[in-house]
Image (cartoon, rainbow, N blue to C red):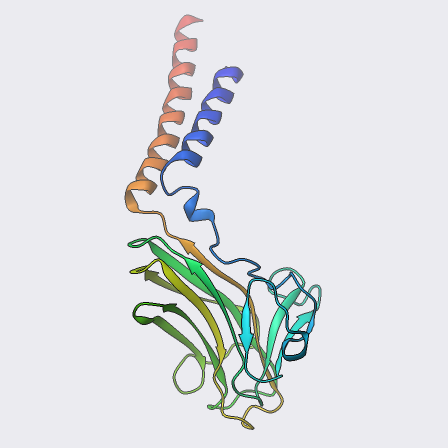
Length: 220
């Protein structure tokens, strides 16, 4: 029975990986999503963060702190007292595909006021913002004090898109507060037909194993 079981499991694994959308659902469309590539330090002076564009004030820092990041060893920290810091990365989507965009966020230091916050968004080069997710400030949910995953689902209407991370504060109001971000991602959501097909493959494998056992019992 073991050779048949191994063969069936191999078939299930192969079919799952080769079904349309199965591999797509596992792929993050962003490169260097956890800011692990590149040196730590103030971006304004370091002038390098692989795969990301950045700008604004000198209050944006790549922090290297093993065990303190949401993922890996490095993360981004925005000084709440210096408005205007931002990061962005262009990516290519499949038109009509539904995606989940997500980002880990938190604050450290002084409890933020209503004028301290950040947002991330997906920008469509043809039509502007697809969505804007505010965290903190009067426009969004409160900033969390521990790493929290913020997620938004959207459907791509264009192939050329951009992932933006922006600090959203008034200069001077956020002194003593650092707003931090880690592991940005954009991943495809499998279509219902793909999910059903994957379930069907697993069910077929289970039926095959059960049928083999039944025949073996009758033959004994």
